[in-house]
Image (cartoon, rainbow, N blue to C red; front, side, top):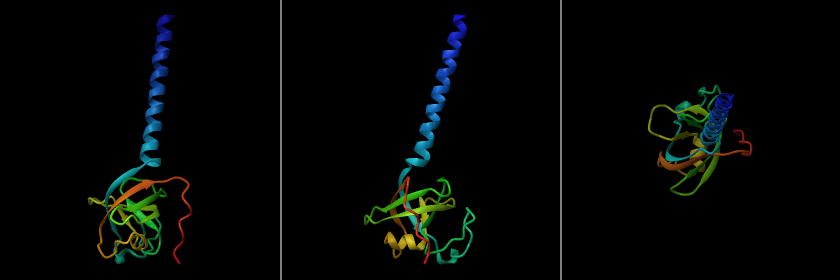
Length: 136
C-alpha cells in the first residue's frame, strides 16, 4: 500500500510539472513575446498578392510577416532609432532571411523608415489590442 501512494504522488508531481511547463511555454511564446531585431517592409510588387494566411496583402493595411507568431497575433512594433510605434496584425510568414519582421508599406511609413528600407525594432505580442484599421 505505501508503494502505491508513493507512485500516485510521483505521478501527480509529474503532471503538475508538465502543466507548469506548458503554461510557461504558451505565455512566453505567444502572450509575452518580446524580441529585438531588424525590420524590412514589403516591396510594391506584393500588393494584391495572397499572404500565407490566405488574406490579400494591401500596402495600406497594418499587417506584418513573422517566422513563428501565429496568424492573427497583434504586435506592437517600435522603431528603436526614432521611438515611433505601430500595432500590426501578423498575417504572413517570413522567409529564411535574417530579419525579425517584414511590415506593410503603411506600417513602414508610420515607423518612419521607408527611405532607409531597414531599421532596428522591438516586437512585442500584445493582448486586447484595438481593432486594426481597414485600408482606406
